[in-house]
Image (tube, helix red, strand yellow):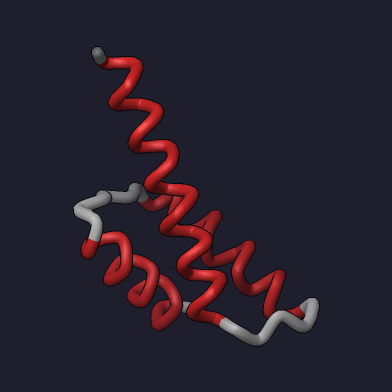
Length: 65
């Protein structure tokens, strides 16, 4: 679990996205769920988390304007 969390943080850092513990716990939980269901491309799932986080950050930034 810590390894998966570390990988997510590493990818988020590439886009300068800071995530709180709640988001990271949610991401790890759902990635593990998808892996248990047979999706074995962990990197693809992590990219999905990063894409979702990036979308949220962009939407929040638009609301600030």
